[in-house]
Length: 219
Image: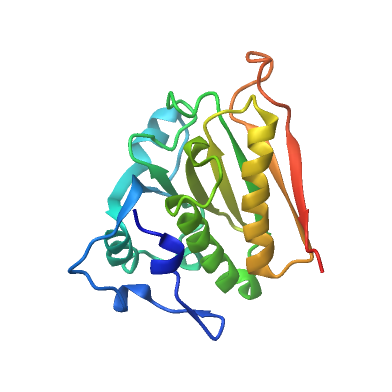
């Protein structure tokens, strides 16, 4: 299996380069999973039926090379329309709470103010979050469903979806890695992300209560 962090992340002078220009496409490096990029049209969504109709599969990929050849044509986060949602999920999992694999899960999320200063950082954070998922950088990678970017009028939201929301030890381990990635990329002194189950605790008392995970730079 390919090590995504070695083969697809190319950084020079602290600026992201285009790995698609540097890969040898005559050789394919398989990922551990097949993944799918989904896009939610920012049109009016006034019912669950409209939501399902607006949710579109864009492309799937199972190798390092296939990811980069497709990603080079994807619109950057900061150029997406307000109301847009982009999802990169394991193949076979629809990015909906109602999907059987998601219904007992939850998500870690963090919001960033939508400013020009934050723009490039959000572009890179979205990409690096995808790479962390497809490159199996999480200790409990089987628990990962996918990662979501939401574009709103005044903020960007990044979320990591997980399969289960009833094991705090597993959830905290995933959240710590996600939080560390955010903190390091944005060069923050500390960062906090929140976990929230998809379901209603009144109906599913076994689900975890909302909680936060923080990480601090160790000098």
